[in-house]
Length: 191
Image 1 (cartoon, helix red, strand yellow):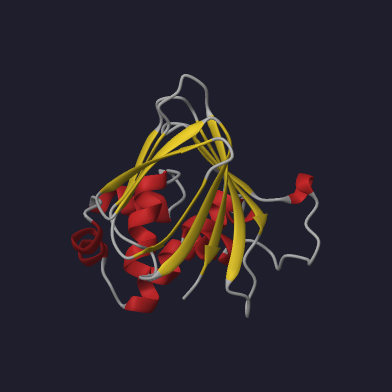
Image 2 (tube, helix red, strand yellow; image 1 turned 120 degrees about the horizontal axis):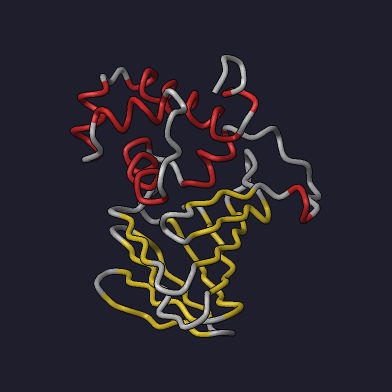
């Protein structure tokens, strides 16, 4: 990546924001590595924009910074308009995990709720070690396929048309058992 290009992409702005968050907290890379369990070298590469974070790593970073993933991604996007045409909804991909995340209604200052569209490939498996914001309310409505969601140690199989709602205080786990991909709407409401 040439100098100046990084700040022109979502990944580049995300890298810069991750570096500024660490600086705001006054943490060294070693301290952040200790808090997240992510290696110092990986964190350094993320902040330099040499590596795009996986969903799991981004989830760990959001947890230590006390942010939802949507809020962090919003911080690197321009101010969203009230109407967000489908073609302009920010999309973030983790091809290694088989996960695509579309911010259908990007979060906005002063509002507590947002809508996300998630797509998991068949066999995709994503674990979040902790709630990004303790007590965050989530409603997951499966639009296609099925997703197994583990919350508070209980596995819920959520099929097409079903909706699961909960407040998240600890780890969670998403698994698409297949054979088809799963697509779902996630409504997030901050406490």
